[in-house]
Amino acid sequence: MARSPHPNTRPARDLPPELRRVSVPPAARAWVASAAREPVVSVQRLAGASSTAVHRLVTTSGASLVVRRYLWPGFLADEPIAPRREANALAFACSRGLPVPELAAVDLDGSEIGDGVPTLLMTYLPGWPVAAPDPMALAELLAAIHATDATGLGHDYFRWFADIELSPPRKATNARLWSRAFDVWSAEMSDFKPVLIHRDFHPGNVLWRRGRASGVVDWANACRGPIGCDVAHCRNDLIRTTGFDAADAFETAYRELTGFDLDPYWEIASVIDHGPSPWTSRQISDAERRLGRAMAELGVSVGKGATSPARPPGRPSSDRSLSPLVVASAVADQFEQIPARHVRLLGSGWDHDVYLVDRTWVFRFPRRAEQVPWLEREIALMTKISPVLGPLAPRFRWQGAPNAVFPYPFVGYRRLPGGGADESRRIDHAGLARDLGVAIGRLHGIDTASTAPTPAGWESQSWQDNNTKLVAVADVVRSRLPAGLLKQARPYLEGEVPAPPTDGPLRFIHNDICPDHVLIDRHSGRLSGLIDFSDSMVGDPVLDFVGLIGIGDRRFIEAVVDNYAHPVGDNFWAKLVWLTRVLSLRWLADATVDSPDKVDRHLTWVERAFDA
Image (cartoon, one colour):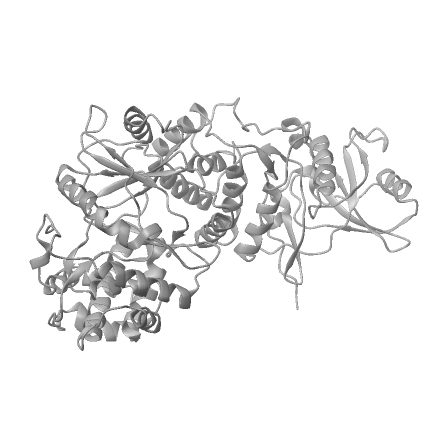
């Protein structure tokens, strides 16, 4: 089987002149032979190096060594300490049991060899880099590096290019986005706890053998620094070589392993670390997508033309300004127990903006005045819901009052463990089905007599309205469906399949159980929480099973029902099939307009709905 190309391979024309067609000169070979105490019999240039010359040398006994020569003056001009830093980092990491080359000899100024070129000699690690490795295995390796006590390393993180004036790339499509990103990056570095970081961790520097990681190379930039720097840098390289889905999968895997949430600041820093180097059109496009998302998560306005996180079409606009700074002030002014030193946007939906404060507390802020009655109603409902669901449901510990900083009431609760089912890579579907069946059953057992109606009167709305709304967006959906699926979906897109009649007893329902509201424990893959009860009401129980199509297929939903404590009625499955088909097609329309990176995910939901 042929070996795949090295992920770092670049055309010779893109390399510095000093690194093109480089061999190991006699003086350097003699130095290696002296250190190895036996002659060198063969030399092989190793692929992937773009800042130094790296060769594998084999001695008469068959031992393999790697010599790294800092030939390029441009790299040394920017980072004169790099050879010493790499030597120190290799010795440090090796002594801590990390899978790194072992130093055999060092000539930090080239005086021993006599050519003035800093040179490191190290053991050869077998293996080969993979452009798209298993994201969990890659995350596990990085987590092991970050778990290493970095005390005594002697090198600390600093921002590259902090002393030069940065400007948007010449072909940037949104210069204001870049300028605002430079402002955020230079104004104040995000808080971090220093750990051992590689600072150039990506698939090109990770070696694999027989499906397992055999080592991490290129430690020239290692230091004590922020985890976010490593995670964002690896995302950057995965986007370049494989795409955004691979980068998101890696970030999700790392979060599941460690609980670490990537601060959007480090995404911005990762883009800016490209520095004044030339940009390709694709690099600009990818960078602007990352910057737009990060700036939006930080609540920073970038003006017309900026990219932004995916949002459902038709989402009502907010009637007030909100940013991390406003959130910090609103929270800290009312709750002296919360310093609110670290604030970041978790998400922005139709009705609320949600922020994570001090990595512990989740705060929800209404986007419009008309949403205040819904929040006040939810606060009252949670006094019934929380005791029934126990640790699976939020408990509103903080209730903020309107003030000069923020004009509406808001709420805060301790962040529940786990992440959304739409992001989790480890789901125990059988165990989750049991958990959801039990939880939904408990929720549906809540007394409906004292449940206040929804402010919009949703209880009296006809399901047939969903037909009308789907027909309105049918043209958007048609272009996304493959021929076979389009044939199945056409009657629904044309409004020819009427809504089934509702029957059976009405129950208290969540009314928005979907993958991002179902939290999954990152270790067990089981249910760890249900969130966002703002749409809760008295309604048809089937509505709480529809969104499960985003987690599993018909068999999964059947397993949930098998663990559900109440009878579902003879018409349950007919209602479920109609609702999953109509709503999954509408959700696909939303994704097509505002979330193109999630279209494939929603197509899967549609396929499941029509397989039912």
